[in-house]
Each structure stands twice: as C-alpha cells, then as structure tokens.
Image (cartoon, rainbow, N blue to C red):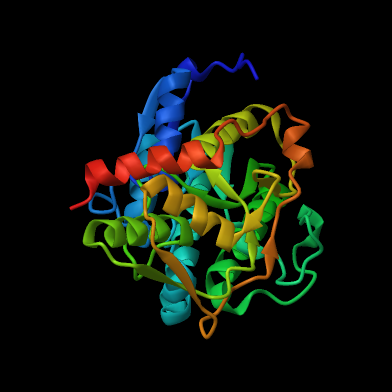
Length: 314
C-alpha cells in the first residue's frame, strides 16, 4: 500500500524502541520519513515510574505514541513470574496512556498480544472472541494485563474522544529477538538450541511438549508495516488482529528452524511439559481489507533472524 500520510510533519514516541517490536517500528518510521522519532531506553526512563513517565512524555509532546513496551516471555517465564508479568505490564501501559492524555496526544497505538483470546476460541480467532471464555493458564497474567490495556484504550475514546486504537499481533520473531532460553519464545529458543547442538555436535535436541499445537509466526518487520497502515487508516474502538493468516504445527516449525540452522540430528519431544493453547490462528480479514498483507516468508524470516543471532550473540 502506497502511503500519502505526511510522516515528515509528525513526531512519534515509540515506547520500547530498543525491543523486538519497537526497533522494527523505528526502522519502518525512519524509512517512511518520520519528522522526529523519540525513544528512551529502559535505563533512561523506567516506564513503571509514573512520575518519570509523565514528565518525559509531557515535556516531549509527541504527536503520535506507539506503545510497544512490555515485559514479555515464553511459557516458562510466564508460569514462573505471574506477579511481575501482571504488575509490570499494567503499570507500563497505564503510565504511558495517562501521560499521553495529559500531554494531549490524540493518536496512540497500543500493541497487545493474541494471548488475550480464550484458550478454546473458535479458529481462526476473530476480534469478537475477546472475553468469551477462559484464558490459557500458562500466560494468563500477561493476557489479563493486555486485556486491561484494550479496555483502557476504549475508555479514553469514550470519555475523552481520543483517537486511540489497539492491535493484537500474533507470535512475532525477527532481528533483536530474545534468545535467552529461560525467558524466550519458542522460535528464537529453537534457533539458539539447534545452533548450539550443531556447534557441539549433539545428536539430539529435546523440545517441550508434543509438537502438535498449531501456531502462526509473523516477522516483526511485517508487523511494523501493519502499524503504519493502522495509524493512517484505522480509527475505531474495536481492537484489530495482525497475523499471518496461516499456521503450522510446532513440530513443523522445529523442523524448519533445524533445517535453516543446519542441525542434522534428531528432535525428541518431552510430552510431560505443557503445550500451551492447542491452536492459535488469528482471523486477519479486517486488516487485510485495509490493504495490508505480510510479505516475509517463514523460511526467509528465520534465515535472516539466524544471521542476526550469529552476528550478535555473546
């Protein structure tokens, strides 16, 4: 989709600009010619600190805010630290939004997660599935925080007439991902584990679960382009899905990553470990109607992410 939006005339604050999503947004906004990009590292600004967040945003006076800041992690991290996932994410998003309102920011995009939807939601998952059933227990704390963010967006639209919107991305990956095995998501964890097995000559890699759950994986640069489209063309209270529109079994993902990395050993599955949701495929018809489609294939995306990992691993 060709953009006629005057990006050169606006300033944009990207909350979480050093993270996986935020760095992709920064690249996309630079390429679009954004007039001024604003970002603070977590050391420069702790978004859990209400006063500091309020002062920074009201002083900067951005035209647009994209909230891509969050405490994230995989099944193990979510299961082990539910207090931190619920508390930190609620603090971050509430502080950013309250400061944005105080600064008079009329355009804000809040990024959530597809884990907000019920564990047994009808597939593919439509936005109307929100709050229609129990959540997946392994990431319930994170999901609850993101759900509260969606409703906080709606509340500001209703009470103050703000043109704020929210979007729910599917599973993301790409350059800048977290490859720590204790807290990473499944795809970057596969990249690191298969790489290390290849490097050490290990004959097998054991993976959590059965390999049967189905997931979709969207490259973060595709998400960034979707965000620009939404800021230009979307303005309603209902959250909107951003996904690939196609899924695969985790077993197939593991085989694809192993192939890209060059691991030729055996993959074993530890069925005593949790699988998470049996399937999670987003219905992307609404954002597709706006003219956006993902462009990066899984194999190409995994290959470029693996290249980034090799260049940046400690």
